[in-house]
Length: 279
Image 1 (cartoon, rainbow, N blue to C red):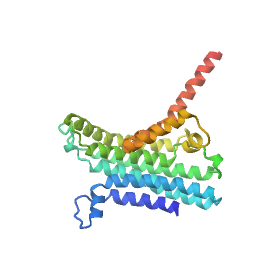
Image 2: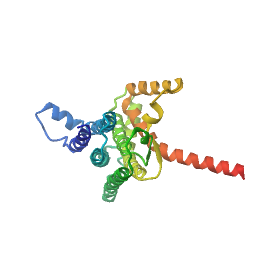
Image 3: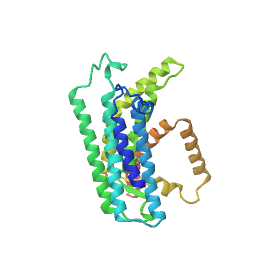
Image 4: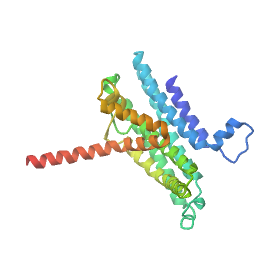
């Protein structure tokens, strides 16, 4: 049921993202989803992440880990973290009108080639998610001890980074500050996030099928007894999350996506330095 909840949240995210804001609706609840469709769609992807984390925990806790459950989990992940994030990013990019942006005089509109390129990036992301999950299925092993790292960026991490970036973009675009200069900067940053979105979609898609190792943050860093310093760091993160959760989620998930390549580059530089000293 938790796995199916994951899939349903992904399907609901795509449905909400495609709602027409201009279509009148007498139902106040539906109207709210129309007005805030991108925010609601992004939150649904994050809720799908919670279901995805819960189903594996429940299976291992009740000792009912099966191959059927693993296959179903990956099918749900293709919907929630493969199709839904790409669908959301494409709809957000399509909904933004360049004539309303600060540089409207220099960018009169989006060329058709750019629109097709953005669609191709979304299609590549979906393909990478499917390949990454298929690879995970054939190499997955049951048991908590086998879940301390991932080969390639996990699909929830990729989908979460896109959803969190959309949340931050929406918050920046709607932010009303007392200082008009700060409001203008926030709006320009929101426009920049829209143009960065295809780059993030492309990068996270390629990282999913890479050979870069990513740590399982909960299993590796939060289980067991930890130092006071790490406890203070987690507490600071929780407090920042309560103050501005959209920005913390966006920055944190993008940094997690970059953690793999950065760690690999650091390890190679360190090995190169060790070899040169030994020589």
